Figure 1: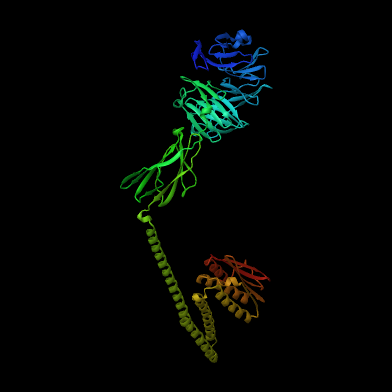
Figure 2: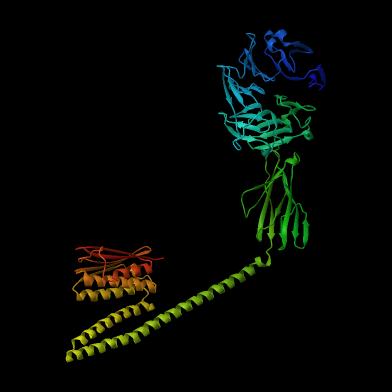
Length: 626
């Protein structure tokens, strides 16, 4: 800000050569002249202390002699590109032809902005022109220029204030003030952004200095940042580490022979990067304190060599403290922990050297802690065995007691259920016996007495009375048959398909034989052993019986087919004849079909009735089982 200085490298002595002006940039021209830019004029400096106005040596600078430049790169052996600090774009100086052209927003290949923060030549010979809101790539061989704008992929916000660019193997690095360091791939796509959230002391960055492909040094307005791009680790250095101050400046910085020269407020620093190599010594980790808070007070245990700790049943929380001894940079030591029995993944604690344990079920656990130094080198984990004693209601004997009580309750419910089933079976057996013995015998007696009365009336030749007696006999037989079916259905001994099939086979044989019909009865063995409920057995039996009866009485068939199959969780029952069939569109005079549909619906079965004239009728029942 206040002049031009010489530094004697051998003695370290600093002397002022020129005062009264602010100087911002200088570069060594091919002819050996040092071109110096001040706030109001361009000069040529010749040691030891001579300043010459630039237009006296290079007349082509007459039109821009009062301009301030902030950067310079050479293109080939005849052209130098100079960045304008006065928002004029880029000056293209052909020092062999003694001419100066301007590359700006008015050029044939225009810049997005005439603000130039720096120009940089990469290994491919392209010129990077960095501006506030964009950057451009200039190709000297054909004078082509391409502008680029970047957005933060996480927030979608524009990235601005590009102050510097450098390259490493496979990547370009942009310093964007306020956003941090941006890594670009060879196609200029953002690979990642390193900023305060990733450990940098400040995102207000200025200059980038690659030491090699894995290590970058970055100046900022709050310290010097060393970034290991392979480990994704950041180490920060401040005035307390030996810097001139924590603040650097936008345009001040260069690297040469392994040293970085960078300045700002209150001076400048010469940084020897050989002394800032990686810390290859991981921290030594110890558990040093456990603070146990219980409902009756607190207890404090301090022991660097503790291996286990017991937490009583009334523990409210336990604070466990540890330390990672790092002599190089203790403030940058970070920690991570895991409880092996709960999670194999490591949980980061940052620089916090303690953790709180609470709400963990009783048992024995292994707490492991490790620490990393400022270069991301992790120590071997150390372990602490923690015994959480159970509360009375969490103890094993209490769990056994609960298990015994639950077992007793379940057994009592089981016995009660068995007793109820037995009572039901006894009741069903008694009902079937009573129906058979009392009602059955009474109906049989009615039939017998009706037959005797009929014989007597024949003798007396009374036709009307004979007809009435015939109806009584028929009705009594039908009631007796129905009662027999009900008695059979109620009896718990018949709760299988096998018993139902046996009864249906007997009924079908008796019925078809008297009508000279050939019976085809087909059943699968694996289907007959399945138990049915009383309701299922009764309804399926009556549907099949009605189907057989209708086929025998009305179809005029020669063959009657009965089929029973089982397919996984479904039973297939079909009664089919080869009779004359009937018109399913015509209303039925009886209630047989409606009754069959109602019975199927009651047991959640599917009933299909198909009949075609001169072909026959097929009645199919599909019963799903669980």
